[in-house]
Each structure stands twice: as structure tokens, then as C-alpha cells.
Image (cartoon, rainbow, N blue to C red; front, side, top):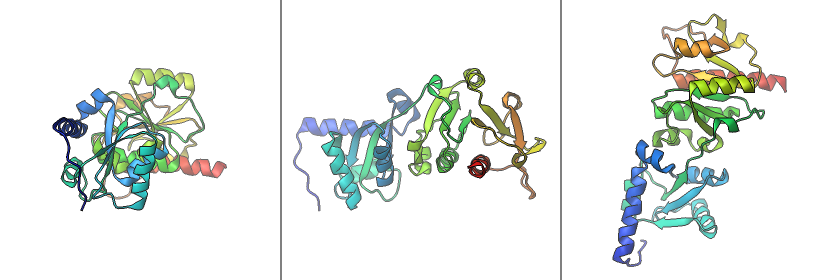
Length: 274
């Protein structure tokens, strides 16, 4: 059993304040205000370190931190000067949004690019979207984008948050390979014309099958929302709109599934060219 040194009242008060601050990061407004987010688990913290994310603080529960790799990870980050907050098991479980905590979490700085910083660099594609309300769907899209070598998200408007805790968990750490830009329809279209990207979307009513098209790079894949897909206005913005054929009784695919189908078509076309 781990024992903790007796703490002074000011230190206890400061620790309590830090814990409340971390808990508030579960709220979208706090993440937006601070530019921070919270991740938990050995895989997520290791990915943050590996991809050079800016870690503000590690949260460690010695009683639960039993994996040798996790212990080594904490030791190395401590040597680098990263702040370490030790908490009890009960506090770690209050912070946790998973059942079996590994005793390791991190407060991490969000990373955002400006649209003008994005240049075609040989990546498979970017994914543009306006509103994905399901954190699980967005997390799956990011995980698939990572799998095929996608660059990241161009988020049109302020309704979608890639740093939502549910989204972060669904990426299984893949979010640290992805880049994020928040912009508007108008800004994206001006930038797209300058950069000569191909803007492709999907619609059940489109005449062309998604496999009949050669997607010349660089590509932006434009994704609609979960319920209605691409609006007529967004379809009108596209250079091409394709359909994904279905033979069952369903009239549409889940947005993460449809995005995955398109991403792998782009991926397979590139593989055949190399």
C-alpha cells in the first residue's frame, strides 16, 4: 500500500484546485478557454510524448501505476522537467472516464494550425467537415485517417471539437498524428482555389460510382453530418460528387463508415500508383 507524506494546508488547497481544473476540462467551454485537454492511459500519454505534444502536467496515481513501461515513461518525463501531480486512487477514479484506470493521465496543450500554414506535402488527403455531433464517429474518422496516412481535419465553423474526451478515447491515440484547422466555408474555398486541391464529396443521389473516379492529389474529402449528409450548398462547392453503392434496405451509411470507404479508395489508388 502506498503512503503519502503529510501535506500542509496550502499544498492540499493547491492540489484540490488543480484537480478541479482538470475536471473542468471535460467541458467544451473550458477546453476552448484554456486551449488544454485531458488524456488518460498509458497508450495516450505515450503517443503524446512520441509526437512531441506539449504536456503541461502528468497526473499519476502510484497505487495504480503498475506497468513497467508507464513507470519508465513517468520517470523520463520527470527528468525532462514535466510537472507531476500525484493523487490518490479515489481522486484518480474521479478524474477517470474509464473503468480500469492505469494511474496515468496528462494535461496537454491543443494544437491548431492556421489555414495559410497548410501546404500540399504529399499526404493522402485532408478531411473537411462542418458538424459531426457524435464523438465516437469523429474519433473513428480520425483513427481511419491516421491508418491511411491522412493529414487531419479542416473544421468549418465551431460546432465540432476534436478534443472532446469521447473523441480522444475513440482515436486510440491516433489523434496525435493528425493536424487540425478551424476555418469557414468561404476561407476554405479561397484557399482551396489557390492551392489547387480537388474537393470531393459523397451523396446517395450522385451519378458516378466512387470507384469510377481517379482522385488526383492533393485531395480534400468533404464530409456531411450524420443525419442529412452533404447539404446541396456543400455539394455545389465540390469539384466532384460520387455515390457509394448499396444493395440492402438501408438508404445510407454511418458517416464514419462512409468516410472510411472513401479514405481506403484514395489509399488503394495511391498504392497502385507506387
